[in-house]
Length: 205
Image (cartoon, rainbow, N blue to C red):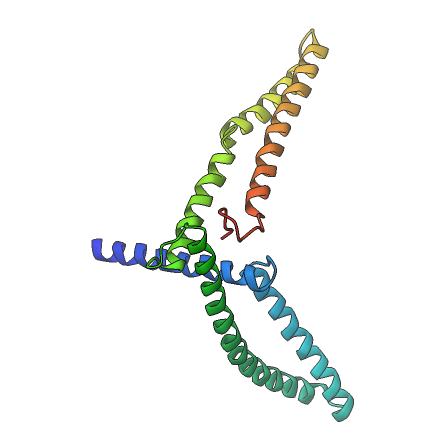
């Protein structure tokens, strides 16, 4: 049982490491675009090619079913060769990115020559993740929820109280405070999440 749990934890850790690195390298190659967004772009392109081929074959042959089959076969072949070619290009770019950032970080005395650049990227990811969590602690999500709940209580109470205006004002004030805090936390999250300056100390991962 312990071995299984250890294996699962290790497997999860390796998958997260791979995901972080894939995301990091894709951001460098695609001007800030995430790995997931890049995959969606490729899927959209494949669908576009498939539709175009079906249309062309149907124009030539005049049979939709045959055109659909030919389109699927052609798109599959193009996809296989395109994936192999893209992998070679991507691997070459990844090697260049590693060299570029390792050199940059060594020049800035951030990374030692014998340190692994990918280990550094992963460590920065966890640091930024921790920073991101702390940026949302101006008021915890639990307290924000309670403020919104208090707003509902004040608002409902206004209909049964002999001083409805007082409770309505308190409801509005509570709602505004909860919204301001929520907006602040969300803004901080976006600011840190979308940091594109990857050559400085706050390298985005």
